[in-house]
Length: 187
Image 1 (cartoon, helix red, strand yellow):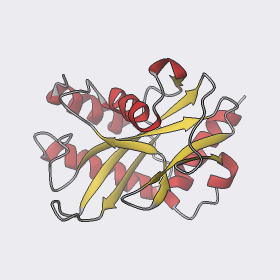
Image 2 (cartoon, one colour; image 1 turned 180 degrees about the vertical axis):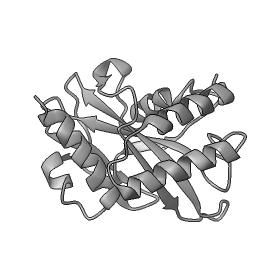
Image 3 (cartoon, helix red, strand yellow; image 1 turned 135 degrees about the vertical axis):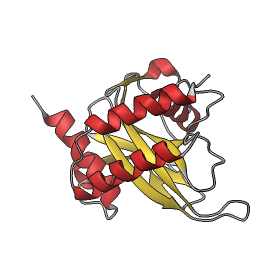
Image 4 (tube, one colour; image 1 turned 45 degrees about the horizontal axis):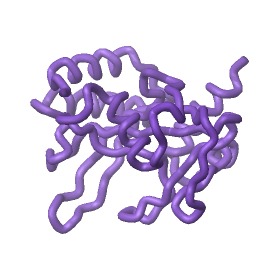
């Protein structure tokens, strides 16, 4: 499956050429680079000091809304995503696709990749659980677009207009919403 050294190198090369949107994201990029360099396997979801994760931002067919789901453990509306599974995923893009399929129930033909590279880099703290300490997620965020019509349970999923997300209380969501908005409004 995943060749860790190759994926580390690929991710480091991406981060070295990535243009951060602001000083906060630049700090996340630098922190993530240092983390990758320091860890033999930064993708290992069992690494208690943190790990690389992925997010899958799903646009509707009109490219006006992003689908969120209610995250039960965090009790928040969030984009899709999760851990890279080194025994299943060849790379972080494939991890984002797998997470999107698992969390939405969509088949791979129901959506397309908008950006083969992450459009956003974030670092956020995950609270401690009984069996695992609090730890950072170094998150690489990819964008996808729904191609085929799909219905989602309204109690667990909701489409949120991108324009509404531009004023969201979470600066991390605001930042990726600004980037997605720029992508879909460019001529």
